[in-house]
Image (tube, rainbow, N blue to C red):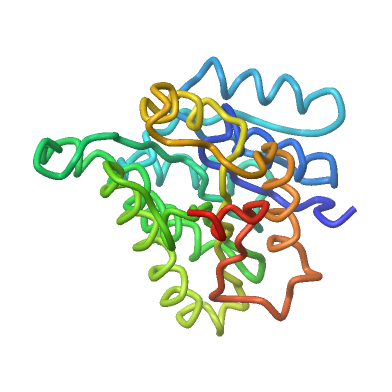
Length: 241
């Protein structure tokens, strides 16, 4: 049991990859804090975990510093420790830059990148060892039209991960990214480019559990010699983008 007695906070844990990560860490002994703005989804994740493990839900707007502090404090207060943070909360917009509003640009960066900064900032003072795993995307490496804010946020996330990993050496906290390709989640199928057929989903489509397995590996002690890097988990999608 790689996460026995460890407290693991997962943002975006109310659905998709976040839910799969929360369930995977719980199945290996982790005590899970599900942080999400979607209370119904978050509580459903907690209910699913309760059959075989421990979990609590904390309501959090991941771009709000006060909410993030409260979520971290709740996690630490639960069992007196915090060992793993998985930053999965994310969103996309689908407009060309000339039509993309400033508010939408800011909203994507707030949810996808500011949240990673905030959870890292407030969690790290409580962590003695352990790991932060950020969920990026192949769009940080190769991308398509009309998702510039999303691609920028994920590219920024990977750069932030590299920089933060250097700051965390003395704390013995490892910081890494997982970059999924096409994954069978609502985020994929709600993409209007996919729905219209303008963007073809070619190649393998992964399951949330496939990404959760990679997250669990990077969060576990067996990945102790890996930090500041991005693990691409895409079924070969980068090769055809």
